[in-house]
Image (cartoon, rainbow over all chains, first blue to last red; front, side, top):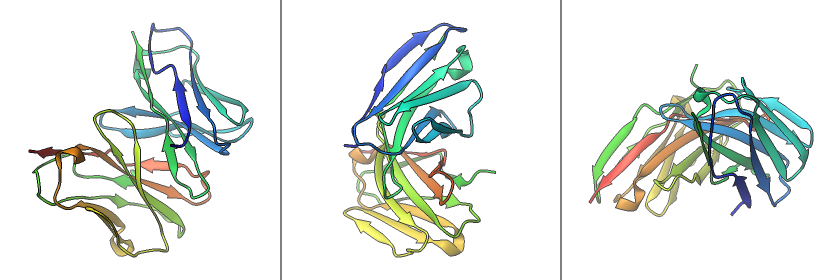
Length: 111
Length: 115
């Protein structure tokens, strides 16, 4: 158990509203990641962080921003949600052996 | 270009059959890592194995075995004597050294084991 939690676990929102998803880890890992999972696409990296206030873009970063003000928390924000952002979002950490472990996921529906 | 290709979208086997899930990767790095993850119907992602590019030894863990071949850029996963509990989506992933440990996932293979 890598001690990763995500909140909320489920969210339904309307197009144009801001949404923030939270990832929390308990084991002080330096690297954290946000992915989205969609049918036919597997998991795609949105953003990742390599330390407090250090973040970088992934493959599908448009429409998303992230922040990491504390080691344990990594926030993903959809500034103005669109229906194309309906997805399952996974947070992950990377351990010292370069393995990634995932949180339970957040199912987001944008109407 | 897709860095990790899982050409098999869906596979169905009868319980106790052996099944091999294919994974082909593409990288120019000499140092990289390969992974397999399992996603059962409950939705969580479960780490199964990590292999580094310098270790081509095959690995066996119970009914699971992995065949890593650099010559063909493949990292295939075999389940022996499949069981209904093996029904899941399986993902292969690649991580290249020096890229912030970014993972590149394949699109997954959905395995159904029929009792």
